[in-house]
Each structure stands twice: as structure tokens, then as C-alpha cells.
Length: 122
Image (cartoon, rainbow, N blue to C red; front, top):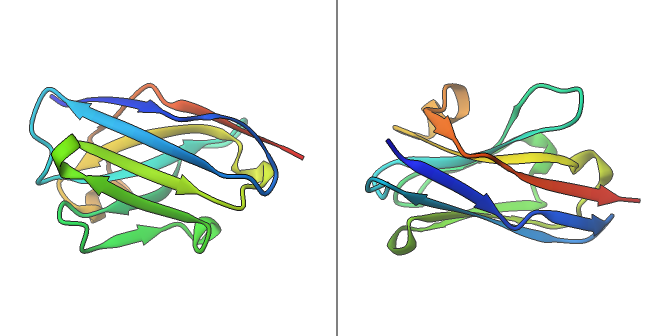
């Protein structure tokens, strides 16, 4: 079992930026794909981005392409989400997850942490 702890959320104005971090512990995770989901008030949890174990493959939801960048640091067992040009529609709880590969992360993630709140004000 892998423990995931998200951090870096906060309150920002529209057009601002945030960098989310997720630290993994308990088991080695360098060979697993990782990713981010989010859940806005009144909505289902939705896929945001994923990255392969070697950072060779990345996939993004259409609504964040060109604004968000996912990256990872295997030496630190961490994955990051750089969010730029934020809008109020990006408001929600952001969750880190892991899976066997990027396809699994996009469709059936194994688990996720407690999440970190992102609030974008107008």
C-alpha cells in the first residue's frame, strides 16, 4: 500500500498560479504512473493529468491543456502539478493518485490521498 499526501493548495485570484505537490511513501513508486484528479462542488471527480514512471508520456484533460504541467521527481517519490492561468472553474479539491500505467490512472486509479483545496476567486 502506498500513502499519498497532497499539498500546495490555497486561494488565488483568477489568472494566478499554484504548484501542487504529492509525496508518496510506504512503498517504492518509481515504476508506477501517477496523476491528478479534481472534484468541484456538485461535480464528480474528474481526470486532470497523468505521467508515466519515466516521464516519457503525459496526458491532460482538454480543459487544462496549455495551462497545467505535470512532472515528477522519482528521487523524492513526488509528483507535481504546475497550474497557470487559473480560472474560477478550476476551483475544487485536487487529489493525487497512482496506477500501473497512464491508461489505468486515467480510467481506474488504484488510490488517492486526502486532497488539497484550490480556490480561484474572480
